[in-house]
Length: 561
Image 1 (spheres, rainbow, N blue to C red):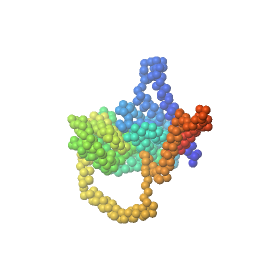
Image 2: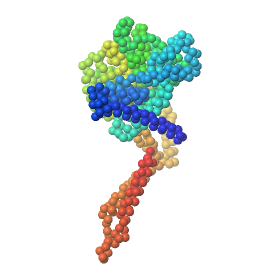
Image 3: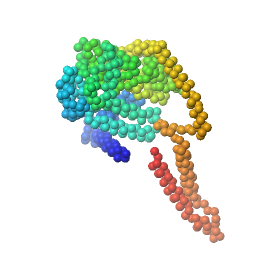
């Protein structure tokens, strides 16, 4: 109803005012430090900042939606320049904490009971505060120590509102700047919205944790904390408390007899197992989301951001890495088409040539010196040059590889990623050409052919019947939205086009009459008879035509969707 649309638009308006206020505040601050008044307010230039720094500070003030947006953009070389991406990587997800009594009230509302009913001990002081949630320590009556992750109040509505505004801005930008059509900004915002809304639903994170627990069951290299689904809700997540060491503190790890090389190998193998074996991976495995405990085991936390790869993409990724190891541009090009789900490419030969040139950049490195994240970034840039859209899952994959590589670098360990991939590649190749997989494909193909044999006569009969009754009707889909336009709509557009042409011709005629005022008859006294009778006709005709034209154009503008 209109009242709900009005309420939604009013919220959008006030949030937009808040965004404008924040941006203007930063603009004025920058003007005082870099404009004519800098001699008074900042004579030594201590507060002067680059454009990228100013943008990062604005994003931090705009709140969690824009912070997460900036963090994702930081891993997208197709959107931001290298300098801006480096600055956006500094964005922190920490935020001003909410009062503990409010958080405790939310916890009690979610579990449907008092704190004392569920917990024997509860630390009323939070141990961490992020942009989406706040974290507390407690002990269940069973004696198990747990961590409570409680969502900030009203954060869901704020984020939904920001996403809606971003979608509106994206549509306007896409219309105003059609030259950026190679990058689907609207789709990017929609993907970002899906990521944010999934991260807000703690039941989604709970499901991810249970899935990873099953994936690494019996694997000593990795551990996923136990999650307590009995007490967890969409706004409250209760999980096992894990004691461990941070992976980026090398001196501390060495002092406690941990082996940095084994830790790095375990970390990479855990990620490769997720990606190449299961096709489902943790998309944000930075050092804050990892712990190290006995036997150099990797403990993973914070599963709000995860992503999946299709089987075809997993095969493509393996083929890409093997093709790179074998210096085979043709294999790499075919693998990239698999990864991006492109059936064919007209400029395949040119792509292979450029891939050959790209591989030469890394030809003189040993495999343990190859920057895998740099290799993927260069490859994605090359694909974008050929107008190939990179799926968002591949950017999540790139982020994961970059993050785990940084963890290995912080441990001062060099790893041969290509060599580590080979066991997974061999296993996948065995699966691909194994009898079980071949039998499955044969059965699937047989089912498809059987279905075709069963349905083809019916489809032919339907087509012939429709043709006999009223002919075949077609619909045309135009634009990115795929809007279907039938005969009535096409006829309406033709009428509009005809009206515009007719008005244009009338305007031309009226203008010519006004300019030349052509005379046909002349009397004996030398007076122009037509001028006396129809002297004001050209002016009247011109004014009338202009008024009608303006009216029609305005009507079309306001009726346009």
